Length: 283
Ligand SMILES: Nc1nc2c(ncn2[C@@H]2O[C@H](COP(=O)(O)OP(=O)(O)OP(=O)(O)O)[C@@H](O)[C@H]2O)c(=O)[nH]1
Ligand SMILES: [Mg+2]
Ligand SMILES: [Zn+2]
Image (cartoon, rainbow, N blue to C red; front, side, top):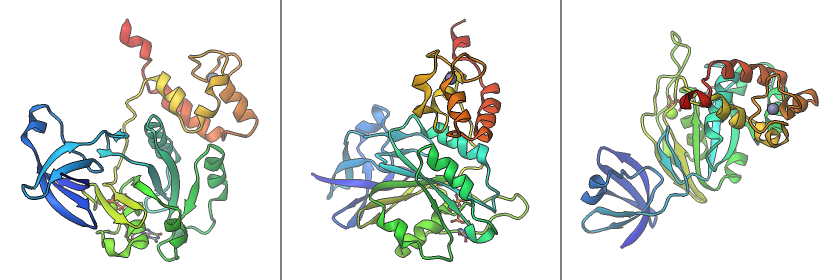
């Protein structure tokens, strides 16, 4: 019985990486019976001769969209242009990732396409607790690679440059990339499945980009998981504060002290407005 890690999974065939090589295996029948499907990132034991996955080892975490197991870190990638940067989309996506036990950093790509570097933007997100990096495919980005270890996913909208970054960091990856659609102003969903690329200190994970994210939250969830709010919510007067007009709200206080940008707060209110109350469920 040998241990390995699933680096890609298509149909019923998982590619398992072990001892600097890989092997294709199918899950044993029992998994299907009990409704368990191995995921990219799963640590497994397998039978090398029969080419069968025997056991999925306990997962540290399990991200649903995209389906990935055992991530240590995630880089949320946004382009400054082509497609245009959307603060709202980034904030929605960060809210969606917040409940997972993940270290999240941000990469802003295509800096070569803008005349002014977005220092204020970076400053805002650093204040909220996210390490931030700038990327241009025309520059050397090896410094970024030296900071990476563990299993690290690159997530974000289609066309922002996730596969391009990984190709730069690990040239042997040779991932497919393609220019964005002029008509739609966004990417073409070039990457269609999750794939882990082994490197010295772990795995980089390329993922298919999305074109929109649905925030299937209740108001109460957004109030907790909105980017940066977790640093302050415990100080709100009401434990179920939605950070609107409530008395002694720590979020409003943090905003007044310059720790949260009023633009992010405005986006929060707009998103909050479109979500149902959790309480409605029990009426
Ligand atoms: N000018 C410029 N173009 C870039 C940069 N990074 C990526 N691109 C281009 O952006 C386009 C999309 O890049 P991809 O790497 O395919 O984007 P992706 O995020 O993997 O897209 P999906 O696989 O669809 O999710 C390609 O034409 C890249 O060459 C950059 O720093 N500057
Ligand atoms: Mg891609
Ligand atoms: Zn509050």
